[in-house]
View 1: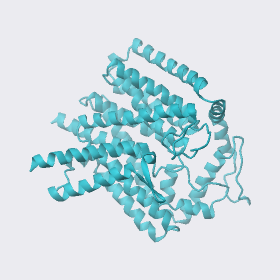
View 2: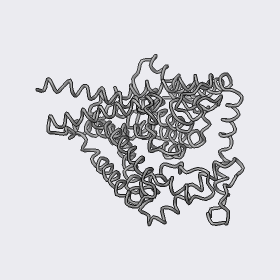
View 3: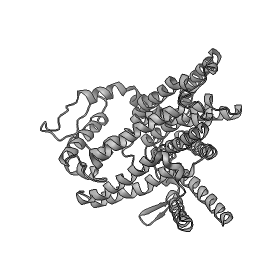
View 4: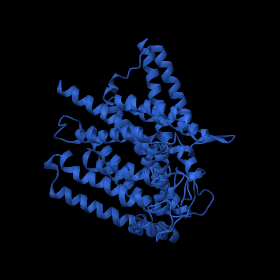
Amino acid sequence: MSELLFPRQKRLETLFYLMIVFALLGPSFGVPVADFRLTFFRVAFVLLAAGFVLRLVGQKQLAASHMMPVRWYVTFFAFWFLYGVVSLAWVMNYGYAVRYLSYLVFMMPLSLAFPYFIDTEQKFWKTSRILFWVFASIVFFGVFESITLLHLPTSAVFGKASASVTTVFRNQNDFASCITIALPFLISALYMLNLKRKHKWFIYITGILALYDLMATGSRSNTSFALPLASLVLVVGLTFVMERKRITKKNLATALIAIIAAVITVNVLSQLFLSPEAREQAKTKLSSTFGFIMDVQHSDWSLDDGSDDVVKGETGESATVRKYLILNGLRFLQESHYMGVGAGNVEAWMDKYGVKVNKVNIHNWWAEILVNFGVIVFVLYMALYVWMLWRLWKLASLKHSPSLSPVMRWGAYSCLASLTGFFFGAMAPSTCIGFTPMWVIYGLSLAVIVVGENQKAAKTQ
């Protein structure tokens, strides 16, 4: 019987790998069915879910004892979803709520599938390689898109001669957030992993092209805040995750040369490949970061000044609109008695009651959770997020986890930097509920905790 079940488990793992590939590639890979687009991600998800249920019925056990280190995250996800279902009792728009809950039905299991299927270091390494190749494909297509101005049908600028680089995403901010989530893994792999020279060169080139794509997006929050913050974590944590004997003057000089070469190469590529419009667009947005902050600070903090019109700052409407989206959201939260306006209903409230805004998406993941689901869910989410960072840090640290393997230490270190940078990266997309790179990095971090802590426990026995 076990011989029959073994290949079934292997097939489930294959479906898992296909699911995460298509999750990152998004709706670009799918077929239109009437007014609905059936994505390959949904197909793989449903097949995996069906196979999982059949295996559960056949074996009469979940086989998830290795997930004990992340049991509170599983519990929270269940509570979060149930809270969303209960919120149907007070939502303004049922259609928005059902759509939002349907996203949670797909995204929560996507994250939890990582710690379930990745129960060994070998599986973590295999998953990391798969994710790298998907990311590299997206990055290389971004370069192609920036040169040809040919966009995929799922892009918001499809059919237009637009300089925006979106790749498999709907807009450039989503693509930029994906880049800043992935870059810490590429950067740290160059000095933490024992790789062949040709592999390091390919990772280095992919990283440079990813930076080029990031510049092309012109995303302020990712380029000016998320990436520098993630890089700061990598730099500060360097002496804690690597043996001191490896941090030599020669290695530091090599790293400095590599950084300078990368900066020069990105600038040269921008001059060669980006259109004048794209260069000017990116330059204007990135150079106006300080002005963006000033627009947020100097614009009125009151929503009741007698005018409902959009306020235009020195850098345009973006800064003030994002500010007033959050202020409106906080007002809605207060009016909901801090229980939240209900799953996905911040858009309905913003459309009906929002002032000084011309958008309905709140454009901030943290505010999105807070306003939709209230204080209880938000506090639990943030507490578990910070706890995750702390546990990743302890795994990455040589002092706290001297017996951890280099691969798992790299995973913990990279996830820590990535999730820290996402504090700002989460403020770029209009909404993150369907932003699969976020759910993937969340799930990968859970998998690192599972494998890492189980590995530590096994070696201390």
